[in-house]
Image (tube, rainbow, N blue to C red; front, top):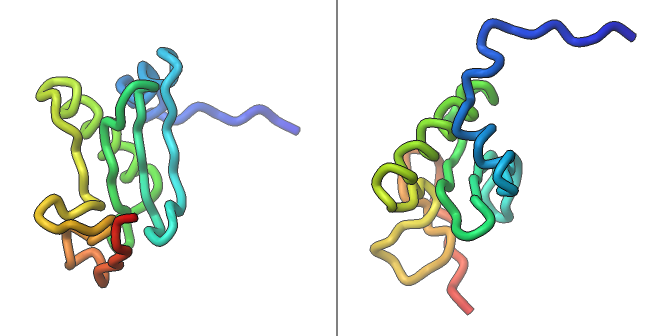
Length: 107
């Protein structure tokens, strides 16, 4: 099996790489009930929670996650597209244009 050929964009996700190198985690996938989530956690706190946009490629989502990590580190505030901070519910989708709100009461 031939080795994968590096692409021009490889190596540009410096903030994601730094989080991983420092022992943090990057997760792409489903965080029930949210499909298409991207999460960055630096092993102490969550830096970013993004929701995949309609027709958004995984590469574009990773690029946005990298930028969100930079924003969170610069401002000290989490970037959160999943939780609506004005509601006392978990997974009340912050941006309804990304799909219907999924509300699960906090326990």
